[in-house]
Image 1 (tube, rainbow, N blue to C red):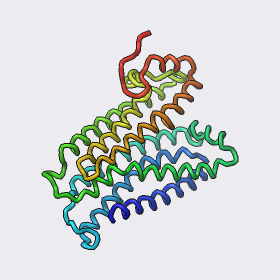
Image 2: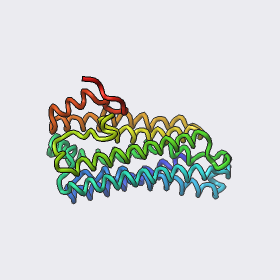
Image 3: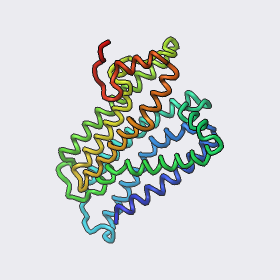
Image 4: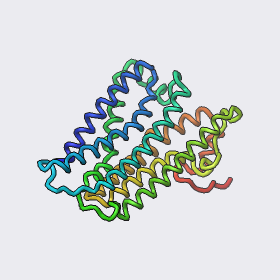
Length: 279
């Protein structure tokens, strides 16, 4: 079956990807590079899906239905690539600006894991790779869609998903830019960024990142079994809100900024941009 072929290819790719990334991280003594690879690595995954799906349309042994909604497949691959490479580039700049100083999250893990750091970190890298495959489900569903093309190949749900994706990408880019500008000013050292979108959410970058994944899921809803793609934004919400996103970031922010950040927590929405609370 095509789905087995695509998932197997993706799993092999992420195994090689994360093994090589771990080896490089060990050499650089900076585990933070996994964030760059994780983000940018979605681009080769989605194009691997496209290449294999295109190949199957010309192989009668693998595909009894020669139709393939290639406009939708190419559109979703393009959306993923733009988002993935933008985020990967943004993280590359951030990691380079601190190197050889490691991101505080990984410093904390080194301290907690001690002598077990290498073994546990390799497992963490592999888990990140597996998560890439799980999160790629909406794109896989779109690319596997062999129903006859509709108009330009995009239905109402696909167009709606693309619009949501665009809103998320623009919002995330603005939030990242506002935070980078704030941090670049030496006068703001130790202060809490409340400029622009950061005045309405403590983590607008996380919110708009999640919105991008909502866009992918809505795009996939027009494909067979598309509802399964809703798993991706659900997982992203869980990780951002409950696991590695907000909880860890806020713990470190309280330690470094103290009462100023506690007041920010009291008055400002954690995730969804909203108006300030009163005194």
